[in-house]
Image: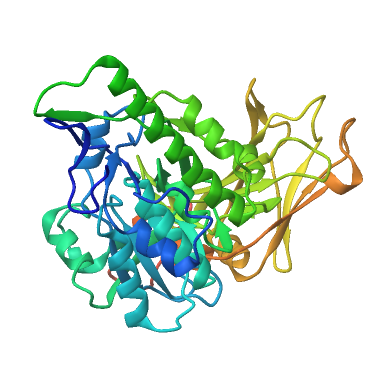
Length: 457
């Protein structure tokens, strides 16, 4: 029998031999199938703990390291600058941490507290308990939520680390906070992709990562060790129930069951990042054009950047274009455009054109096996003009270009703020040295008149 009490629970095969199961990462319900029950019944069943199965979070870390690196998932209302989360959006819900046993209940309570708000929800999670993830996914569907993958940095944390104890307490406080949201480096791993699948609107930025892998069952035994046959049967039953639970959920959402197939094919110890093509195929984000806003960050130097992914009708793969703006000083900048290597000779020229300015990139670009990089120099006035309106990347004639490939729209969303932050990190412009000449004392004529008045000898 399977107890409906606290975790860990016991599966008793015969008197005196019980299995205390701790299955890390997923949670198996004592019910057989969630698809056959109404939504409210499903949620109640999902949030009742039973066995757990743990998922790792990234190839570079073990499962336990990944879990220990994150606190239990918290939900916070965050306010940023104008357009911080998109055009006309300055507030969002930050959902960050490991999906633990109480995650679905806390999420329901949080959403009830904020009412009918339609703010976007940004998830940054290494995964956790799948059953709780599916319960949250069901709530997202009921709320008709907009879900994205992004990490939030809070201003209230000051110099404390964002994942430190002080900052974690702030995220769990329930008060409105202030900060910025970043998609670069954000993750939605393990059980998290199944969670966001529940939301009707899912937007995955080009620089965020989604990763999956297979579950693994851990069992601790009390009262004696059952036979290998009994243990094998228990494992098969658990995995069969897990398959039914996940596939019923995916089927109800009208998504692609191959997402689960791919997850099951990756060893528990590893982690596989989903490609952009798989993200579209598995209905996690079906958009054919994805464009991130301009974001400022400091790596070895300050840089403002954005990424555009485009897949033309009938094409199998997305083409990536990344724009990077760096400064030499506050009035001298370089804009680079990095793209996948085109087949054939490529474009003969490239220009970025807006209502205010036209930038012609140096030709030919730097080319490698993986791509090409175009560069253009500009001053502060040109950079500011680009931030004022949308622009277009326009390709010149080539042997392989088609008419519909000639123009790529480039949104200026976020560039004004990113440019301001970039300029703040740049040295002042260099001024040409001027000669220092004192006036002629007895004539008191300022330079250059004094210089011109000297007799020629």
